[in-house]
Length: 249
Image 1 (spheres, rainbow, N blue to C red):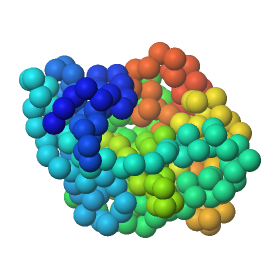
Image 2 (cartoon, rainbow, N blue to C red; image 1 turned 60 degrees about the vertical axis):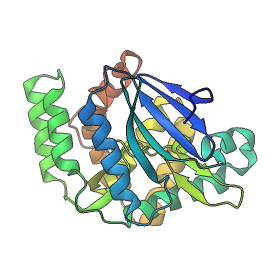
Image 3 (tube, one colour; image 1 turned 30 degrees about the horizontal axis):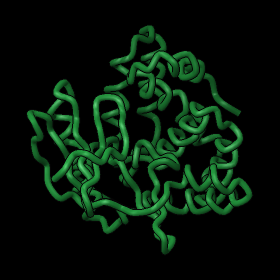
């Protein structure tokens, strides 16, 4: 395929389009195991029947690993929300419905969310007491087997011309508790300085899934701690403000 049409540039990766396919090309320093795991996640989620780009191949381009998938024509929900602020309630309802559709699926071979969170907490530079409390809180939470996206935000939902939603970027997918996935989405809105959308989102999610807001709140310190391991300085102060073990009301 040709690599002259750049769709997006991200840290350590560039996304190219060539006709009906896109290639996510990773830098040489990107761990091979993470790339192969992302492709495997996507293939496993594809088997659930969800609307996602289909894996075409995993290949090497000039010594760099690349994941080639089908191209989905459309606009992201983030773009639509920006262009049509008067339709924000409609888009947010769709956004939550898409997430619920994901959580309704099972994929038994995906990584376990509890195990991943425990590992991430151990990798933080938080003091031993805080890590202990976070591990204890995590291990007290119910361990479900729902498909969890792990980075569910409006930029990862494409709406095609006929209104069909497709979900991108399955690199963080796990199987586990849906409330943890909701807590991460809530924090992602907050990290983007959209606390208004964060509140609108979480109220809708809890209402549509009959989930207590307090239950999602119990996941926030755990999810914030795991997110802090990504090492983004601009996010660290905010995330650490959520990493506490008090009971949220």
